[in-house]
Length: 359
Ligand code: SF4
Ligand code: FES
Image 1: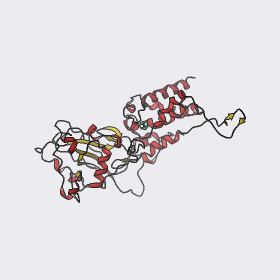
Image 2: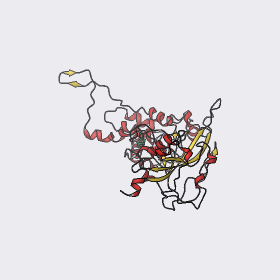
Image 3: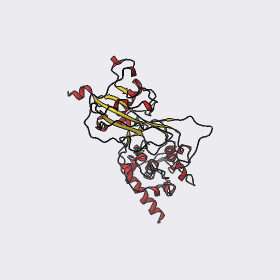
Image 4: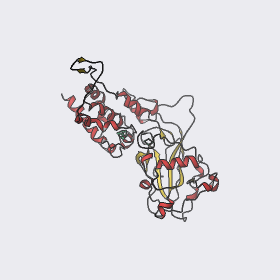
């Protein structure tokens, strides 16, 4: 067994955190939300309170961590939360890539925390001091989390501060670079000495792009779920009773050939994680767009031979902020955890809507 395999890998996990301010008497709505502002003028998809910007404090926080072989980034965050900083907020449920609740951006790539292996995402970082990029109700300065990869991984650089854990003999693997997890002014003290040993590898985690942040890595997915709901993602069959040679029986039976099932089977695996939305420059970029997740849900039934509402479904998305807003960038296809070629599905929908309009 290699030394690395026995001792694990020292990594710095840098998290873009957000602490919301207490709500005032009435919430500010829409004014700074590009989604709400553009979509509320007659759009059936875009209007939602979740599009408002939540006021609060953005800051970046580093945790030094000794990751064990095979650990996922979710495992690391759970250890950090249990052993060093219970205030860290993130969402997860199944832990196995099934529920889609833990989509975040890791090193700028939208992905699921529970399927992201540390060894796949840990990148070498330079010995430059980390920047304390804190802003009250403001934007993070761009580039502060994008450290260049120059130096090799520093396996001994992660020092634990004794007072940060209650039991050092228990070998807690997470440590905080600053004493107060909510005090950004105290952050990154361990990186002040440029002559120190090489920094450990770096993993940068941020909330999923394109969604309003509620706290730390937790984003508001209401808008996405409402958009999916508006397209009525359930079977609308003809409702005819199945018959036998003896006549009608009191049950519904929807027969399908294997090749018909094949047309939508993969689409039915969508877990509504929102990764395609976070990857989409149109949706995450702030344009009024129903988004690829809702369109995938629509396409799943459009391609189902048992469904009788195809025309109605195509009409529902033939709007300026429906499939028409898709720019065919196809970034949505790259990171889908269920292997759906989202961009290709968007293209197929575009073609079907066009051919229906030209009829
Ligand atoms: S299509 Fe893929 S990336 Fe998009 S919501 Fe569904 S599972 Fe997630
Ligand atoms: S926790 Fe369910 S998909 Fe990651």
